[in-house]
Length: 124
Image (cartoon, rainbow, N blue to C red; front, top):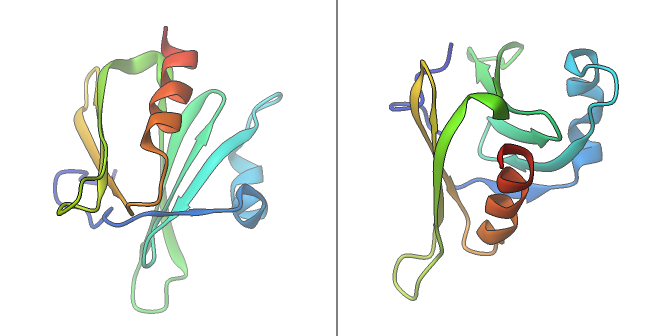
């Protein structure tokens, strides 16, 4: 499993969910759809209607991948922080039962409120 405390899930930018559909499709259950997708230098995260999936690209060639699936039903709380004038990154923190905190940083142009609303619509 990915160590979210030390993982390089920083500076994620939005990507078209269709760009990750082929890679994620074998993991999705019936009725599950990708709502939002983001990519960093190598790693990606996907928000579906059922869970959050983190894709950690490993190794020099990048052929090995770790897929961590975290269902919304295990989220105990979450926090969003918008980008500011000097701190141009937005942040999302989610606390999962049995796992602890997952922290993600997004490029300033990401609508972090949309992500918070998406999580809320599936958790509350």
